[in-house]
Length: 416
Length: 85
Image (cartoon, each protein chain N blue to C red):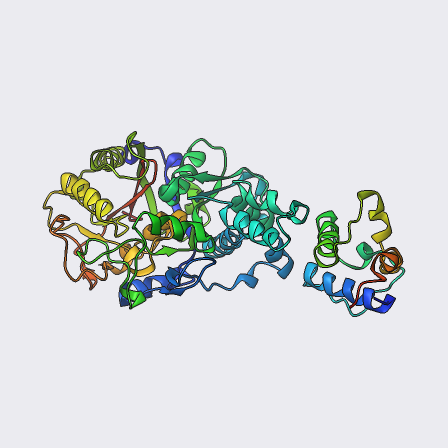
């Protein structure tokens, strides 16, 4: 795809804003990933016994007044923080940027559960009198909430929307941004994904009911993708948004370029509500490779989606084995082992934490891989300690979600 | 509640609804909106808080009485006179 692209259609990442349970900017996050520092902590939520979660501690007041925080949502707050950080990182002279040519594309796994649960809890204290149901409920729960709050924060008058894509949402946000730039709908896309999911008890209760909620006496050891002792998902919050620009625009303003998005794909299993499908996942990876005009041998780092559920890990390992076989130079890693599953932000954070590899030449590890599951036969997994690579030219980022939604994004080093 | 009690209740509510504002110099006979950054959703918050705290139902037609501190206290005085602080 990219080799035949005109420069106008080449899209690069020029700014990164993120909050993760183990870091509130790319340098902190990368440092934690290289040092093996987890962001999973004990967590209590309404109605549930004590559990574990990946909790973010970004400075909410950096870009919002107290009133904005009171009126808006946690998802909006995460998105505002990340968007402002990305814009700052990209070095824009923001007042001079044409705001009607900026688009905001925020991937979300779900939205509104937090606010709905809160309101039901609130009216329960009034014998379920609906006259005390908040007038803020609707603007807080509309599906475009997080992206819309970003436009208000940054004065953006171009298009905005949230992309509901389960846990493939972070990649979906990136892909939408690339597409809108190529269609010339916008000149700048703020794109990625966010999640506020730890603030709804329902997600914990549902994973628990499914037998898929992780537990461990040491929170840092709870999320164990590809490990025999895994026992489920650690729910996390977080956000990762980037500024995407067409290559000539980025070059003209002398922007720092983190990498070029050269391939992507999305497809659907058309099968089960929750169980993944190795065949469709492999097809998705192959489609992204084909569009990037590269083969498996050209990929240096594969950021896996694995969530530490038995079937999820096994299916993805099989899909990766089908595509990458025993290619020895490929490094396969996993970010959830450090921070848990950041849902709508997962795909975004997982790609962003790997981007510095283009410069430092290191693949961060998958931690907590003490006893590899033989059913996840992936000799290339970077187990527990980072691996120095001979070259890092392409990073491939997997992100899959419920209802059988698959997404893959491939980023190339720039300059190549 | 006395008029002073009601005034304090309104200040407490405003502090929650407009947390960035300095409320120490509110002039009672000047509209809130000329002194504070308040919009229609904020006014609904005031109405909602009174409903939650004291079960006071304020019909939409009466919202005009809530424009100033003085007007709000005047309006609420008979409704809250039997409420123990």
